[in-house]
Image (cartoon, rainbow, N blue to C red; front, side, top):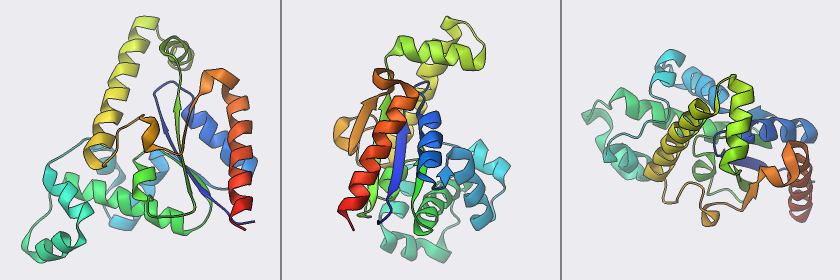
Length: 209
């Protein structure tokens, strides 16, 4: 059976990370989240992990978009331009995701991974969302904070993720047209969502035998 690469985008508090971890465990394939991607990007680029995290998911100038999307522009600028550090951080993450995918089937959560790997025919891109009250409840439990603070944290995180995704890709964060599948994790719960995605994965993988 051929393997597949699953990428997961998620709203804050929707359980996307837990679903990604559980799915990878069920399938017996590697799991990578933001921290793992940044660590690998740091190793491959030589940029310290502390610096990587400092510039994490922060949109920069349109020049970076041009460099990533247009290899000819990148080659042209090459030795004639000292790329700002935040530009290097994004490209290092982008390259790390591609490097991870080359290693075989895996689950990757966050960091525009679906877009970085959009040219692959072994990709299944997923977006996990949930109603705000459910996300507030989950965030309260996980962070041990009150509902008001949880909602502020959710809104801030989602705004940052959407800004980053919308800036660097040609798609819209959370839009159904941007992914193969979007699912409300409150419908089946964490375990039920994992079971559903496992079934989808296995059927998609069998189809490419």
